[in-house]
Image 1 (spheres, rainbow, N blue to C red):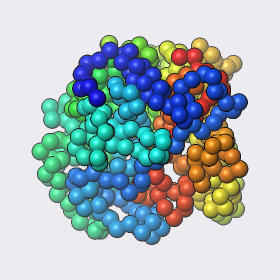
Image 2 (image 1 turned 60 degrees about the vertical axis):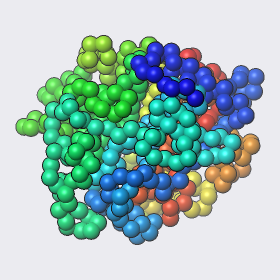
Image 3 (image 1 turned 90 degrees about the vertical axis):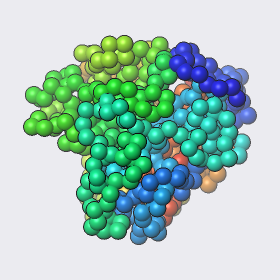
Image 4 (image 1 turned 180 degrees about the horizontal axis):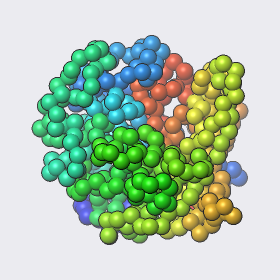
Length: 482
């Protein structure tokens, strides 16, 4: 393929998506003359959970239930010596070459304390829908590679000290003591220190977008912050804090307890409740962020706030919107009925005022398989994994954005059996614990991927194994208004 040159015009991203769509014809995507009556699986590709790249030893600080599950249930031996798992894809975007995508893993091993040795990567990949495999690609050219190596990814770093707080790389030792082996003080890897590489102890990146100049914007949960890098992963500017646009409580900012600049201020957002979702408008001028959790002063625990960031002025606008997540119940292992508020895990722009939003419950696994209990368990089978359409111009009587269901991910037709064992009776389900990324391939086709929370997350295909990173294509019967 030809060398990719940056900066590139915004329209190049849409050309890339169009080229990707043209490659889907064999999978049922691309043309409008083969529309299904209901949302239908059009492609399936999977990256094995146990996929790694060379790097500093990682997994030394995985703790709690994740450590127990990884060691006792899955049989792993930690740490991963001189290796970095590729796990946990939380976002992706079309690369400026057809059929090639940039995919981002999240902060590492689930929390700030567990992830200071986990590097932050964005990989270039090509889903091979014919073979069902995920193929490594060159980050700069999108040419196919024999394996995942230094040419296939970027690592986020801050060599110019743009971020305004101390990093893991600034310390002689990782914060805290290790879990594997237990109780040790561990020196920060020299590669991290010398390159000021960012880790899961610095940022919990959960989403990213590319702007019209080819720069990357990452959404972080620790701050929460927006962080801008160039196409090599180098931080270009100071982090951008999130204002409390709806003025809920006294803190003028939205800040979690993990915010490194919190000081004497009072946190008003739970940990792991920050900028889980992010989208950019087709013109490449505005970024839309969606909080995963409610602010502590909010009287409605189901409100999720959408904020708008103007790239040209490098500032959030005073405008914000309210999205209301659904709720339900499940019966836990003690037989107690537990109330559950669902979470939002990604959004993507349809046009300059309409978006798709992924909403899910905490369940994992398909009850039909017989491997996952539908009730009376600490982790019951999935029931709600859905994609909704919202329009910023449409709100209900209470001021919340109106939601229109586009896809029920627990009920996807699969007449061709593309989903293998995940398809039962012609119906494919995507019952993953974390469905964290959705993007539009063409006006009738969506692509989604899961975050497998490796190595200790709940298995959603087999309770005794961590999930693979699964990429799926869903063909829609009604066109999106791109």
